[in-house]
Length: 282
Ligand code: 3HC
Image 1 (cartoon, rainbow, N blue to C red):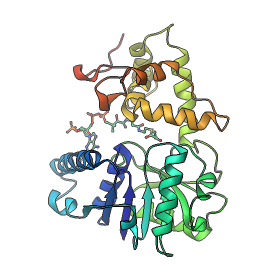
Image 2: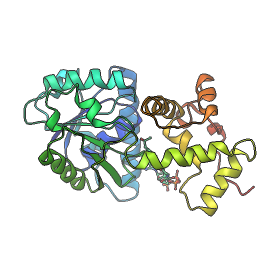
Image 3: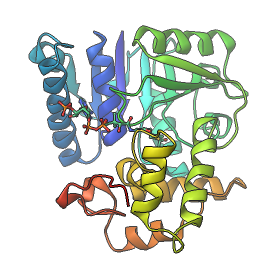
Image 4: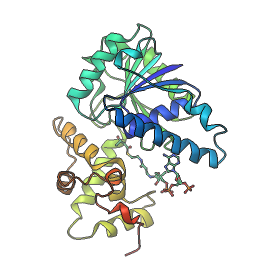
């Protein structure tokens, strides 16, 4: 299969890697050239890690399946076009409109949106029946679950095809037939984030994360996860879901983003990542 990934941020680069690892040819595009260079570096780092663990044989072979696209028009002829740009309705609409105008009539078009209903986005897509949600989790290469979302206009045949594509990647598809903001996973996560943020002041970030990690069995603390997925991303998600009646409320997130602290990727967020924080029993 030939796959075009639009957006080379944390998610776009991870998704491109997943498809390349599964043997597909992948084209990746971003308006920001430095983002593309960073994406290729991150993919190489990750594939090398998998090689060290005996999960991948040949790094160069995987890397050779990934090409950098000169523009959105280069998705013409791709079997699957996957939009993974910033979580902003207008940005996504713009990219989806352009990409679907270029797509051939047999393509499947998917969005990796975390929160925006597929039906709303489908209004910008030339072939809405061929449009689905395909929502990966960070880091895509390690997270087994992918939500596959059917919007009101998605044709059942293309929804099923998207589920099969996800299965073919070795991932577990979670079919979502109720196209609501945040779908299934993020609707649960928002409540967890809200509950954790509501405890700040009474307890510290480290205390709350210790409970999540040691007592509730989370793979990382709740504030660590916010840092890890990106505070800027979480802020954009909160703005998108707020317009649709859902509450993701954690005022410190906005304050930290204003200070340039976007989480792990910027070196600081709720934690100072330069000092490699670990969750301590406190
Ligand atoms: N590629 C390859 N290897 C990777 C990697 C990657 N992208 N990321 C981490 N690794 C490796 C590490 O290098 C490390 O290797 P080592 O054993 O050789 O040192 C190994 O995986 C384990 O990593 P760490 O020691 O750093 O940490 P953990 O054991 O905690 O594992 C984790 C990391 C898999 C990310 C785990 O903490 C986890 O599952 N966290 C929760 C993640 C999660 O919930 N994601 C979903 C977020 S919500 C979302 O994405 C939705 C969106 O809409 C916002």
